[in-house]
Every structure is written in C-alpha cells, then in structure tokens.
Image 1 (spheres, rainbow, N blue to C red):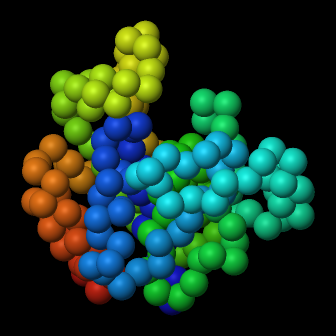
Image 2: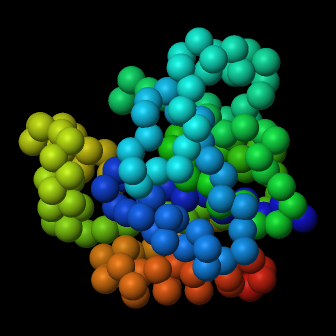
Length: 176
C-alpha cells in the first residue's frame, strides 16, 4: 500500500529542517523535488534547468508540477513507492495527489505569525514588503481532504520528537 503524507506550510515554518532531521529516524520514502533553482543547504532536491523541466513535464514524467517565485517544482511519478511516502509540496497541488492515491494525509506545518516573521527576517532572503506578503498569504485555509496541523513553535528537539510520533501514527494507520 502507498501512503502519501504531504508536507505543506509557509516559507520559513521549518518544513525542510524537520524533514532533514527525521530522515534517518523513521522508515519512509522521502521524495525529492525537481526544481529549476539551486537548492539551498537545507534542501535535498534535484536541480534541473528549464529546458529539461519542460521536456520531462511534456513526457508525463511528473505526477505534479507547480510554480512559485519564478521557479518550477515537480514530483516524479516513479519516486512514489509502497509504504510511507513523505513529500514536501505546494498547497496548490494537494489535489494532484488526492486524485491519484487513496491514502493521502496533508500535514500543514504552522507557526504563530510573530515567530514566522522573526524566522523570515533572520533568513535575510527577502525585503520587508515581500515578508509581509508571505505573512498575509500564509494564513489562508488549505483545501485538503485529510489535514493535520502541526505546530512547529517548540524547540527543535521537541518538534522533531512530536513530528516522528505523528508520522509513526500515520504509518501504523492509527490516524486517517
């Protein structure tokens, strides 16, 4: 059986940090995204240029694609295996997975707005105006059939522990 766990959340809530820190602590298939920008040190993705991306997209290699901030992202069909599949995606493509798989749970990683603001400021990637736009966008309701909110405002160690417990419960199908 293929279990799909979609990880969504605003930029800066700690999705990549959580995933990087649990990768060797839970038996799961951590899906890498294809992206048209260089991944930063917190990400484990495949970088491809725009031409290769479009070729793979036209050849139906991907199950889902999306664009964000002038970059293209995708998930390859052949990466999804039997067992627990953990996939960090855009909230805009949740339906791509819900339409193609029976067992899909979306985990929205959340933070209080003031903590998210501090994290975005500390990253120093964006202007104040862009940070404010992100904050306004980050609190819109997510459209998903099975959604669980995960508050990532505790210490990293506690968040990692709680996240693993949640994923183990999903894996053992005690939450669906």
